[in-house]
Amino acid sequence: MADTDIRELLVAYTGDPPPPAFSYDGVLAAGRKRRRRRRIGAACAAVLAAAGLGIALLPGAGSRDDLTFPVLDGPFWATLDPQPYCAKASEPPAGPTVQPTTVLGTRIPTEPAAHAGARISCYLAKTVPPRLDGTDFYRDPATPAGTRPLEAYPLRVFDPKRPAETTPPVISVSAVVRDARGVGEIGFGVSSTSPGAAAAAKDCDGHGCTVRTGPHGETIMVLDVRTSSGYRLVNIWIYRGDTTSFASAANGITTEFGPGGVTSAEQQKPSRPDLPLSVDDLIAIASDPAMTLFP
Image (cartoon, rainbow, N blue to C red; front, side, top):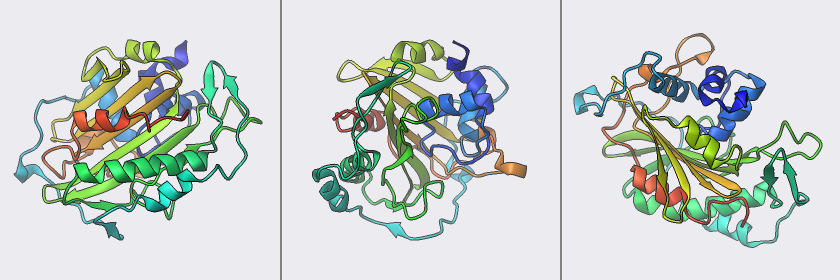
């Protein structure tokens, strides 16, 4: 099926702010509609480069002299309090549940999106900060106004009146992080699986993309892109039955250039020598049973 070709879809996925976690399912959905997106541009260029379209992929990060230290605006949090989210998650769902349904082979969760967001926020606010000791957390400017760092929000909510346009449902999470080593970005997400693991693995044909087996037998796809500027972006998709979970980290923050805010991976600059979270950390966090749409 043509619209499972990730390279072709990524070409279309440039323009308005997209999923801050650069989700694979978001890429597919946006590619089908041919909508232009902006913040995904770095990931697009990175994958296209991996496909041999002209950006060098290098094994090392930039030296300390190569780093750019951006000025971060707005408040920051030295600690994240999971209790407000956990309290909401412990209450019965406060909205109408979706009737069990399947759309084009994709299972739709019955849990209201706001309740799922609170449950996932509770888990991440408990789990991520202990792995990032001495880190300040900033809101990702691509998230909705009022969103706190690592607060999950529904990026796409299933609407039974528009099933094809609102499938798969997606919950997204992200933050900008700063510590003594510099500034970076982290992101997470969960969505109903579409396409399945086999189709995704078929698109993963080297050039920085590898397929692994997870701790619970999951199929894991890791895209690890490093450009000549020293910028590094890692995107991870974990396929567990009806849920696909996602994790991402970059050793810089996305900067927009030119008319329309179009950007490329090669234009991005590292603002720390390493990722805020390692690939193993990202896999451990995203493969936890809490990262599901079907609790």
